[in-house]
Image 1: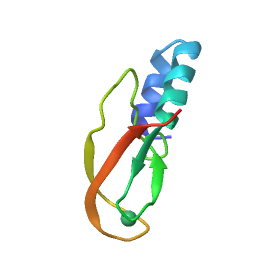
Image 2: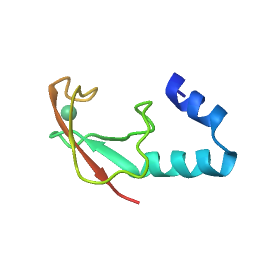
Image 3: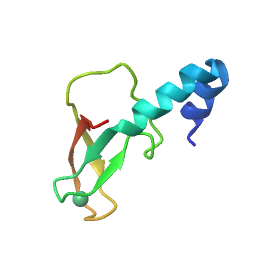
Image 4: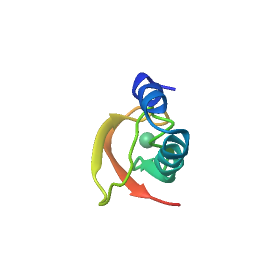
Length: 74
Ligand SMILES: [Zn+2]
């Protein structure tokens, strides 16, 4: 877990931090090559959010820096 994930896990009630983790895992970050990870796997948190933003990052599969699509997939 990343620092921010540990921090939220420490300050939030367990029920809430589990809900936050579950939702962060349901948010997918997809490269144009098709490689997909969850926001949680990336060390991030996305909770009570909406919309489909684009995140600029380097993809570990194709090695390209590109705009990754962020979408919710429960
Ligand atoms: Zn890629």
